[in-house]
Figure (cartoon, rainbow, N blue to C red):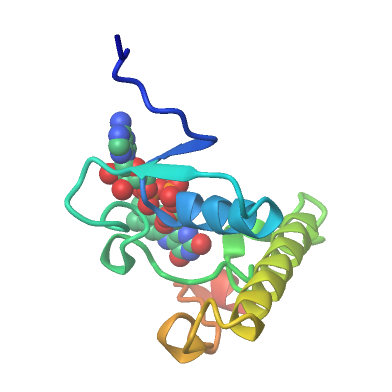
Length: 128
Ligand SMILES: Cc1cc2nc3c(=O)[nH]c(=O)nc-3n(C[C@H](O)[C@H](O)[C@H](O)COP(=O)(O)OP(=O)(O)OC[C@H]3O[C@@H](n4cnc5c(N)ncnc54)[C@H](O)[C@@H]3O)c2cc1C
């Protein structure tokens, strides 16, 4: 008698950018693995990963002011910005790999470089 259970190697819950990225990485590393993605909504990328629910920036960390807090002595701690920027460069390397392999066909449909901009109020913040 069948238990009704199917065997698979990987189950990803949710079809957002995290499952898309992890699934793509796993498919590159172990192509023979069977991967199943379960999404409760009607189509992929409808929650946080939908660009209308998300500022949509790649977080290069060049203008997120909360990544560069000012210390009591007036110096600025940029360690978080550097860490996040390094992660962003890794993402760019991964996307370049996918473009070179033809997995992303037209990168301009996927990523669009924009100038970085921060909006602040008040003289102190503008000076910062
Ligand atoms: C307002 C806002 C602004 C943001 N701005 C930025 C930004 O500028 N730059 C940036 O890099 N990041 C930004 N983020 C963060 C970024 O959007 C998220 O970190 C990223 O999209 C998360 O991806 P995810 O795949 O983990 O989640 P999601 O895209 O939310 O995917 C999770 C999926 O799982 C599904 N799901 C949940 N439970 C189940 C279940 N039990 N069974 C089946 N499916 C299920 C959901 O329906 C959803 O589709 C922002 C997020 C928000 C909300």
